[in-house]
Length: 397
Image (cartoon, rainbow, N blue to C red; front, side, top):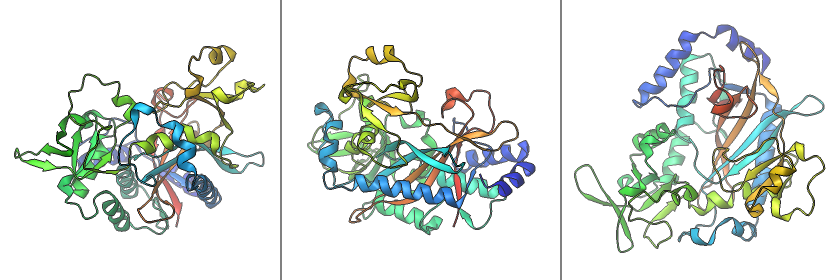
């Protein structure tokens, strides 16, 4: 998006260097991510950086309201109440589609907000790899608030492990080695010394939780970094497990499961910002908008874009049997802003934030960029296309 840097990057690009870049990422942790990593990072201009920061802060104002828990209580289903909820989320992400205003200026528009961890470790690796193989200006960084890479990992270690023995900290998923994002878990495991476990690995004795390590020893679990999508776990009745989220347990949650629901699509209708498209709970609308074609229908309880209807009509609305579980969100028109070697790519930027205990607000720490040439961001919209996929944004520091 910064024309001079973009032109230089594109003119110097080679497929050979790109393959070396991918091989380097795969070799670092002996694992090749199955998702598409884009040929290019995104170079974010200062005026867009300022708007992204303003957008994050204005949305955070709502999340910091003293009545936010009351406002979001309806997001938690009665049979999904997990003991031990903390005062605020630990992990916070905001996804923005990059659009153009009427005056031609770039503007971020919120797609989704999420209280759930997302690639905090991998995004530092991919940024390091881009810098190693491409000419990234020295005064540009993927990290925010003056953080160095050492500061960033110190912060992650402080939040995820703290004074606990790392072996007693578990990053929890369903079949983690089979997850698309397994590379992120691997980095967390090796850099922090924590354990990565499937929900079926956890055992219980009374309210104590433990797992069996490689030497056959019982290791008590003191903290759980939650990567399990709770409503998807409920559908997995094939899993033989002793540990149940809804039962009392002597563990501290690093990212309590409730925040996945509280800070989600459920949050969108209560946000009021020029960077947030208007959203409505479907069951609270007395009358549908006249321009229904300019809205997207989204289920509240879904992940990675599943169940979203882009081009909706009244028939789609009438077919919904549980309108309380859907929102209508005004469409966002992504602008093709990243010049590539053929057609330009659309861009989405996810701002990664962390909220430490004792702090009044979360801070922005890192980011994720996704490039697309299809109708939406995502693999199924970008088959057989190049210069698309996951990347990172570099911002002037």
